[in-house]
Amino acid sequence: MIDLVKKKVSEEINVKKSFIELGVSNEVARAVKEMGFEEPTFIQSLCIPKILNGIDVIGQSQTGSGKTAAFGIPAIEKVSKNSNLIEVLILCPTRELAIQGCDEIRKFARHKAWVKVIPIYGGQSIDRQIKLFEYPVSMIIGTPGRVMDLMRRNVLHLDKVKVVVLDEADEMLNMGFKEDIEKILKDVPNNRQTILFSATMSPEIIKITKEFQKNPEHVKMVHHHLTVPTIEQYYFDVPRGVKKVEILCNTLDTYNPSRTIIFCNTKKQVEELMIDMQNRGFMVLGLHGDMKQNERTRVMSSFKNGKVDILIATDVAARGIDVDSVEIVFNYDIPQDEEYYVHRIGRTGRAGKSGKAFTLVSGRNQLHSVYNIQRFTGKKIEFKMSPSRQDVYEIKQHRMLSKVRKILKEDELKEYVEVINILVEEEYSSLEIAAAILKMNCEDIVPSSFNKNSLDKNLSDSVHSFKPRFKDVVKFRVEIGKNNLVSASHILSAIATQTNFSGKDVGKITLYDKYSIFEVPRSWIDTVKRTMENCKIKGIKVRALLVE
Ligand code: ADP
Ligand code: MG
Image (cartoon, rainbow, N blue to C red; front, side, top):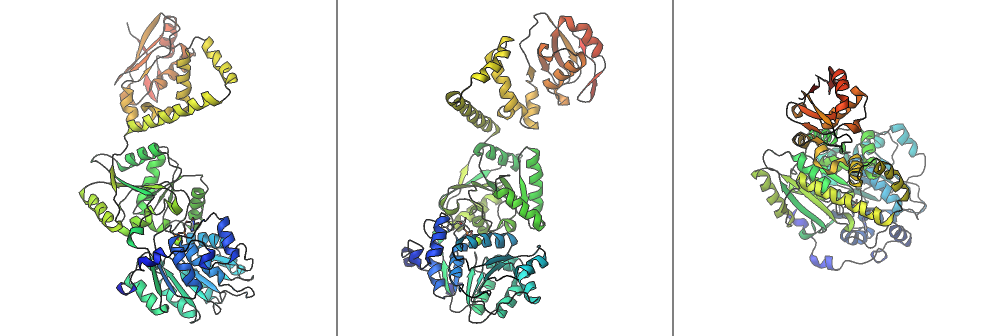
């Protein structure tokens, strides 16, 4: 790797400012502009002119730095207008990357009608894929396994290939595609140009570049470019006895991010966390390497189109996946190596947008890993106090109150006021009515109904207290209480169903550990005694006894 030294800083300073200046055609420059790209990224500025000039390039830069355009744009420019044969072959490690890369390249090529790109990947019906080749194809982007397969079946003819791109070469090797790649590279014409992108430069990668590239030029981001500066990086300490998932969920509730990716090291952890979070009321999806292709596609499209905004994933499954505006990346598990960290947090802060990365750290060893990562990236990962449940309530209340204030200021409420008036005439105060409506709509802004733990705790002060319409009340006792995880509303609804009286007329209900006391109008005594002599609350047989 040492002989492939980093490009000098001088080259960095020379970075050109527009796609046209880099030698890109008007058609492609127009398309890129329509996609909202304002100027080339660092890696694009360095790679595009070299690739256009026929130079073999080794590109090394972090995720999110715009590599697809760095090779995709010059590759498009190499496609001849009148040839109907495959001239560009792009290999990448996963189906997702093939599909995503193909989509992006099609956009770059939209004003060059003669450029036809198709994705090739396993898991899709081979017959359907073979059919695609009945029409002219100029570029393919696919996984090595399926490309090999189609070559063997004599469907793919690569004898006119001018450019081969290996995207995420290290990942392709990790996934066991080495032999396929070598076979493919031996099969394409020798005078072709070979471009290789890889996050890391292992000896295996260097071997490939030596064998298959001609005088390659190495373009690498200098070290301080390794992490995107707009990403704020923090770590949370997970104290002994506290569950990681608690901290995770509190943080999500606090920041309320539009999109989040949570990284775990294993597929088992992905699955467990998925269930854990779903039980806590979060809409989440999981993505890992063992999932079937159609499942993965479904998950990715739900995440991309915003149906679900939390994705739990393993490194390999999420590698290179390009989704805009991921606001927060969590390292639920500390990544196995420093480069994974960079890849993970590169999912946020893409293309200049700001983002946050939170790493959960439990114990000294893990803290050590964080220090190692810091040394590797040269960026500090700041300690942050993890938000407590109490913080979460406060933030939620604040958010809710701001919304209400806005509606009070801006909206026409006359007709709603009329509805509320019905209750006011029943002598409820506006404060009580507002509180009841709040309870109906935002139960989770106060501790009681949030999760089981806080529910348990809260039962001790659990009191149901409607304004009594009857002054003369009596007390009843039932042998069921906080220890049975009942709430005041369980008891209230039992009284109402058993007696057939209105629940509104029930007075105060107080829960103790083993029993509860409720108040009803004196006139109800006989009915309560009769109907609640033998009834069930939460499945437990109870009998209401008049407290003398
Ligand atoms: P990489 O392959 O390096 O991980 P991608 O090629 O997937 O990165 O690009 C990451 C994101 O940045 C994509 O959404 C892409 O459309 C966007 N992007 C790429 N180049 C530019 C640019 N010059 N200006 C703005 N956005 C860009
Ligand atoms: Mg990429």
